[in-house]
Image 1 (tube, rainbow, N blue to C red):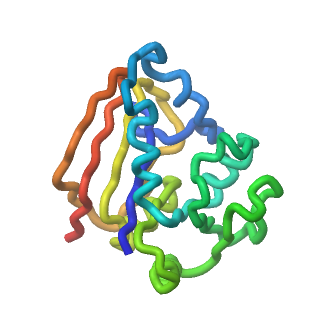
Image 2 (cartoon, rainbow, N blue to C red):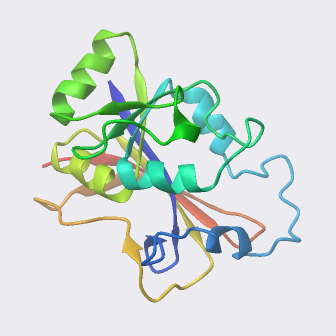
Length: 187
């Protein structure tokens, strides 16, 4: 099964403030820029390419706190699994939209593949780090927002080994965001 990351960070590498807020993403950059036919910087095209998603508990809680309407829900009918060893039920507003999972990540990926899923979207800093340490991530798309937070929750945690990123492709958007896509090559 292919596993891909698609995530935004501040220019200094944080995915959220220390409190977990991501509202800075909406105020960063040039909001008056003409984004042409790519206003979401490729997110819709990425979502069309995946058939399932794995996120961490903190990521789920951030999404739940946004109280998104059905029209605002960015994941369509994508099958979503949330990793948590402590939370057994999703928040009320995510009931029926996510499945909770506690256990071995490798078993989860094998189970998803056995159910016919072919391409997983991996989201959340701790989850991404865990997948990288298990050598499960195939590609990463990181979009840097033109803002410095100075502190916060970093994208990557402690990695077991250095990981080489290859075949980079970069796009600078009119709104001053910069996106880089990498293939992941493990030692």
